[in-house]
Length: 415
Figure 1 (cartoon, rainbow, N blue to C red):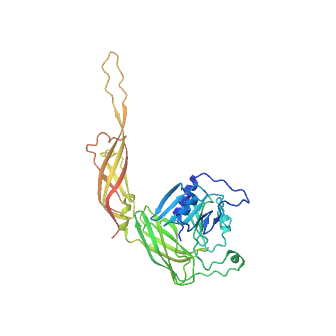
Figure 2: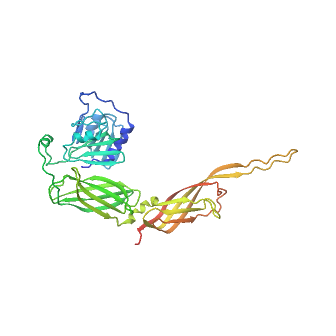
Figure 3: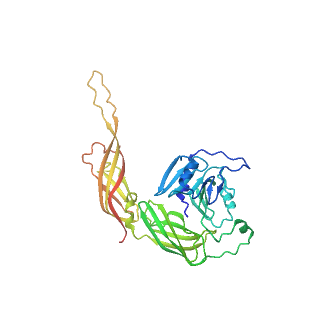
């Protein structure tokens, strides 16, 4: 089970850009009943892709999420459907006429959702900026909220939970005193960079009583600051005695991850911590692909003996030592040169000297910079010469620069 956050965030974009749907009069039968863990209106989880398209008609758009996985976008009450290997796995609605079996619809607040699902055997709440996601994995439903209100309802196959009692029985029975699960441990936790995405994976081993869990992952920089914090599902869930669940989470990064923390928490509030580990990222060489983002280049202003556009400063913004750095710089100058028109011809009456006029033009230059070593946080000024560059070197010239890393490697300081 893993109702994807990306699916919900993408759905939010559609929600915000699409026109609002009409509401349903009070007491009317909803035209698209939402059945948690089963489906929305006539579309069901587990339905064949061909049958789904026959019911909903041609989609307004579609996106290939992964090999064998496609997300379709529709303009009706069912707004999105995700198909994996030809079978419907997830579907969502943003239509205010659609109501869940617990009475929640688009537009309701977080308190209404929590009240409606207070007997749910497990829930997870995550937040990113102004977005809140309420996930009920054992009911097969999730809610995305923006501005405090539900903007999307997603349905997926519910996780099996043999120890979950029916709602009516749970409401009548006296709940047993809470027990803290024991015997939960993390195993084989790894973190690696793939392109610009940091992938954290591992296993949750349980030697005690069955427990429903999820993991929190925090990516940390060299200064201890948090680069990202996400939640991930554990599959299968709950993790039974002597069983192992696994997790994997992919997070886009723009900086070097020095270490990361994985925390296992119970699904049920107050989400107690059952296990935690912090891993150091030893293979820093894998971050060489982020060199473009590690360095910063600026054109130095003109100074005595240094015309404008003749020198740049290269700064290493990362905690790693960069070696063998080769940069291709593209400089663009907006030149404003004063031009003195020729003096007027002699006449009987004296003529005033003509006013100088400003000529504006642009130039583009390509330069190469090579630095054998650039330490963490170091800043180096490099001359790039001005020979044969033309008249665009005065104090009135405004320069901008972009760069591309041609070569370079990184290593931890002191190694």
